[in-house]
Length: 492
Ligand code: BES
Ligand code: MN
Ligand code: ZN
Image 1 (cartoon, rainbow, N blue to C red):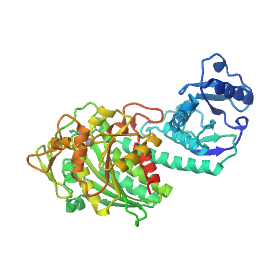
Image 2 (image 1 turned 135 degrees about the vertical axis):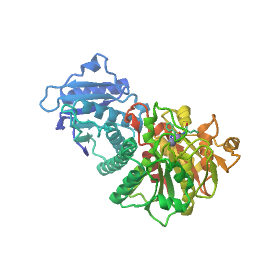
Image 3 (image 1 turned 90 degrees about the vertical axis):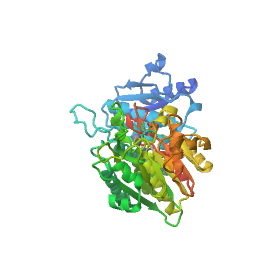
Image 4 (image 1 turned 180 degrees about the horizontal axis):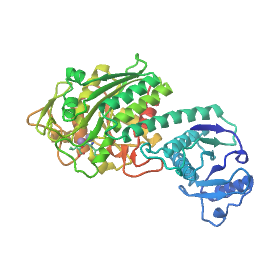
């Protein structure tokens, strides 16, 4: 899709559909409507009648009988004082979706006046439009009357300032949006297409395309390294495990290590899950998908950082060779865990990766995992649970989360929770009972970290969506790519 910025007037757009954004504040609204009326020579009856008042989320289609502009989508942005990047993402997504359903393939969006700088407005519009248009539809046979993909979106403004900055910001936003879409595609892909070998292959393809390194460890190498968690969880599956090591950037710098849970399908194993909703567990490798997406983004953006990516990839299945409740596993760092429930498998594979991370002498380690249903109970779909051992690192992530709107919320790691995962027969038990499931999950992981700063993001609720949002669709959101790329952009 072509995505560009032009400094032109409303009148001179060649497209048959243009989008105009207006604010709700009465005087501003009036003047914006008047300007629109004048420039396009149309009456905005919806505004005159009070049917359209510029409220956030409101939109109306106007028709003109002029030769070129046939349709104008008028979109409300709400009040001037409440504007944010998120307002623009939502508004752009709504307009792009509307234009798409109207089967327009080339549209112009006229960027609104803003107190934010034009480059950041253009970036938010880019993200909103690209992410909003995403749909996981490659398995749906195309009907001849279905809307075709968008061909071009042109952002326009009459102002003359900062063309290069605007184009640069749009380029960056596009790279990050495309990386998010890669993560969505990987996570949405069904379990018969994405399994450990093909997940590893997807990471390798991205590495080859973008010039970062990918090493794929097979089952034998995993055994030789003593990764008992990865081996144990995968042993019931016909699909062998993989362990992927990615590396990008300046090796002279101490790296940030990103770890992504890569359970390509989580049936629960012998502690099998109920049938209802089990299909969602094809997205249990969302953390891994977002690590791959983040590598795609940072390598395309050439960020001046050193990043290692670790992806333990397994399928969790019940069979005669499955790991059993009561089994005891020895992990990479030599510690043992008692498997009380085979459905608490994510932490078993992450334990190996957290141990493996130590050799890189990381400046920080961040793991992303669809780890617990409990975090969905606690925070729903609008914030990831954040737990860790370093306040500074957590506040850096919190800031990156706020600006990208991939928000995180801290949960406590009080020492009293630790005893809930005490085992009588091993160093630790993989479940902590009914309460505080996300916290006991994090406490399990903490047992396996090295002497480094660490943050765990439980993305079970934010990565897997039950319904569509402003610029997300039901299914995989790609959560993690935007917050991590922003975090690494700010990383010194
Ligand atoms: N992958 C699931 C967690 C999950 C649940 C992700 C819902 C997304 C939506 C994880 O492996 C799991 O099964 N966790 C168990 C842990 C329990 C057995 C301690 C859970 O949350 O029930
Ligand atoms: Mn599970
Ligand atoms: Zn799982």
